[in-house]
Image (cartoon, rainbow, N blue to C red):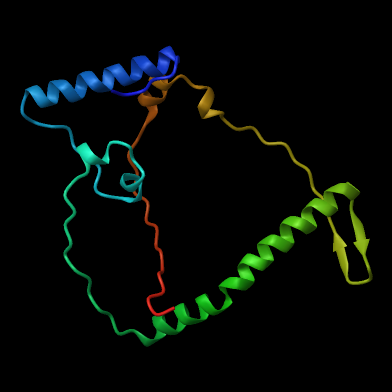
Length: 148
C-alpha cells in the first residue's frame, strides 16, 4: 500500500510510474534501481526494494600532503561552525539597522538589497517537470575522520 495525499496531479504521475514498473516486470526486465545510498536507509520500502550491497573494499593511500590538509581541516572545523553562527547573528543585527553604518571604529557595514528573478519549480505540475528532466553528474567528497 502506498499512501497518497489528495493531489490528483501527483497521483496521476505516481500511477504512470507504476504502469511503467509493472510493464517492465511483466516483460521480465525490472526497471533500474538506484544504487544503495543514504536515501535507502530512511526509505519505508527498503525491506522490499533495497539493492544488494557490494563491498569491493577500499584502497589505502599514503599521501602525506593530503593527510596534512585533512588534519588541518578537522582542527579548524569548529571555527567554521562558530563563524557561521556569528555571521548569522551579526546579519540579523545589521538588518535591524537597515542601512549602511560604521560599527565602533573598526568596521563599515554595507547592506545591499537586490531583486532577482527565479523560476519556482515547485509551482510547475509534476507531469510537466518530467519533460525537462536531464541526467547530470555530481561529485560530492566527504572526509570522515577514523581515529577521533
